[in-house]
Amino acid sequence: MNSRVGDTARTSWRENVTMMIIMIMMMIIIIIIIDRNVIKKEAEKILNYEDLITEIQRMCSVKANVIPVVIGATGIISKSLRQYLSNIPGKHDIKELQKTAILDTACILREVLM
Image (tube, rainbow, N blue to C red; front, side):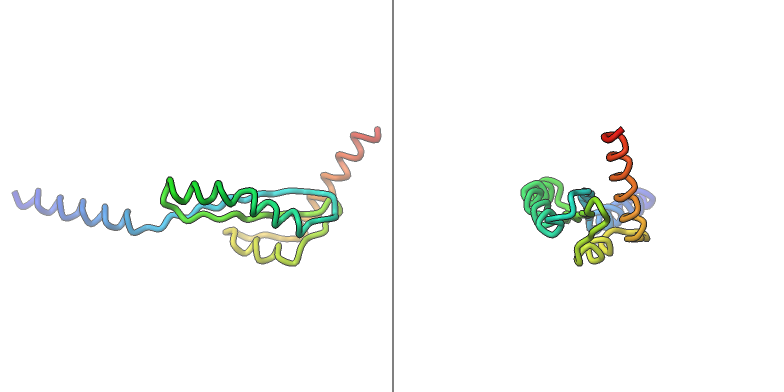
């Protein structure tokens, strides 16, 4: 009988800990666009996904946010990109992201022009 009481106490403790964990969801949107309107495109993506984020928060009871990663076709970035990348776990190198955008643009141009 005592073992049952102990098991019940452990189970309720685990359930309490599980309920106390705050879940966070990040929606990361990566876009490579023409160099103009990088800042405008970031704001547009945040507004476009605002309703979806609200719905996810309501349905799943999690904290969610949109992280737009917008890089121009020739590597142009906005001033706020560093701030957005700091919200994503892990190490990120902006120069590598720019290099990838430029190389992908060159690959697309090579396919189109040949």
